[in-house]
Amino acid sequence: AVIVTWNVLQHFYPYFDVVDVDWLAALDQGLEDAQRDASASDTLITLRRMIAKLDDAHGAVLPPYDITTTVPAAFARVEDKVVVVSAAEGSPLRRGDVVVGYDGEDVEASLAATGALISGSAQWRDDRLLHQAEFTEGARGTTARLDFERDGALVRVEVTREDAEVPVDTPYAPLVTLEGGVWYVDLSRVTASEFSQRIDAIASAPGVIFDLRQYPREVTSQVIRHLLRAPERDRWMFKLRVIRPDHVDMTRWEAVGWDLDPAEPHIRGKVVFLAGGGTASAAESVLGYVERMEGVEIIGETTAGANGNVAPFITPGGYTIFFTGMRVLKHDGRIHHVVGVRPTIPMTRTLAGIRAGRDELVERALEVVTRR
Figure: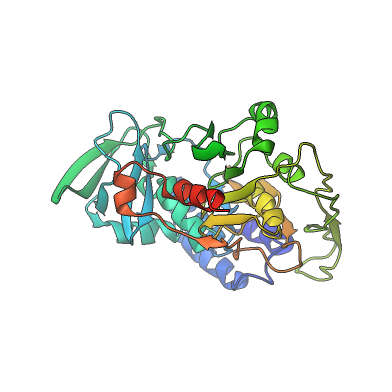
């Protein structure tokens, strides 16, 4: 599995000139680790450690078995603390709890250990560890022990790892009008049909807040078309045509783009996008256009820095490996990988805001829109 993984990435990963990795040394280390591996789960860790070296947020390893899951909750780093921002119904965890320990370890030690197996930028790693709760991953049905601070007291609870629904971390409906007739559109929850049905109202509103903090459900290029004033034919995605091994003659790239034409009605109001470390892939394709648009603001934190079609393959032993198989640049030709899209208005959340049940980024966006 290690040899096949190394070989496929050696010839087809398009970002070796961007990331800082000694891939040959990674092969040596992977082979040493494989000799010591005594189980399928050991091999999984070895492969994940290899992929993590590529700084590829699409990079992942799935085992041939499905027996693991996480605590049904979402966390975030707020004021340099690990904070619960959402939890499944009936969970002993509460929004605003500050986690200090996990399974008998300091929570930062647990995050560091699991983070070493996650590929991608620091901001994407935090999203997977915390928002996706991967630092709590373990066998389905087992319990995790969490120590946290609540109301000045230290509390310890046991939480079952199970596939329960975790509520979204915002008090707003996915498609709703706010103060002053401003629309809030959560692209991670809105369907294409819902967007189409409301586009006339959205386009004529004094402002629109598009939430792209997580992966869009269905609506991506449609938003851009309603913002464009002229056709665009930018070339920002590049397919590699490999005919020789070991990065020789890596100049055969097929340049492609979305080739979008403006769509009516044109969105006329002030537009703000929300973004963060969980904004990746298709969401970053949208923001790749947005970051060049005059007058459109991006509020939040830097995006994941991972775009391009995902390429999968299966190794001996049945492990499925994913990696970014397409090179994507910013529209002006600069590097996007790991760098991501930076906000025009950087903003982080506060512990007080989370405990009060507020979505401070939406509130800030509403201020920006209404103070035109």
